[in-house]
Amino acid sequence: MAKKKNKRGFDFTAGEQGPADNPFAALRALGNDLPPPPDDLPEPVTPATRTTPDAATRAGMPLRIFLDRKQRRGNVATLITGFTGSEEQLKTLGKLLKTKCGVGGSVKDGEIIIQGNKREQVLELLLAAGYKATKKSGG
Image (cartoon, rainbow, N blue to C red; front, side, top):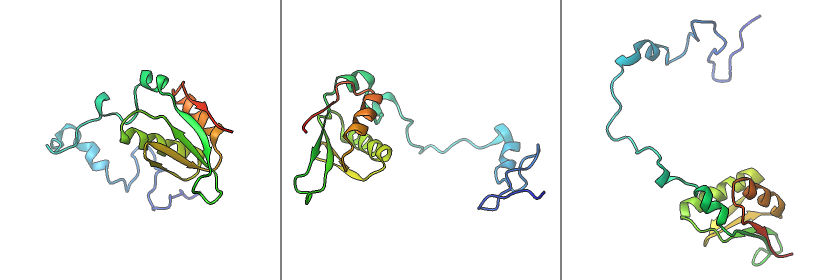
């Protein structure tokens, strides 16, 4: 039986020696003889530069989830308000919610807008993420 190749043509099914066309095989043989990394590498992520609030902040953050139809030509959007944190943290949370819900949306004026009626799903996601003071509001 012939060996299968992935879409890029690399053979990842080789035996103990490793794939014959692995571009990093020669680097593995060098071991500790590699040159040092460059000096202009970005700083590693520290707790002060995290993109999510810490657990105590998340637990006490009073987020409200409600439906909005204003200025949307009758279309429904789920609005999340009450986030207290940096703009970067708000954007990260918005991206997480949009990805998990599988819909579009945006982050504007301190609010997260998710397209469609996703209140139940957003509530479950926020509670699972540690935002314990989250509530649905409105009809």
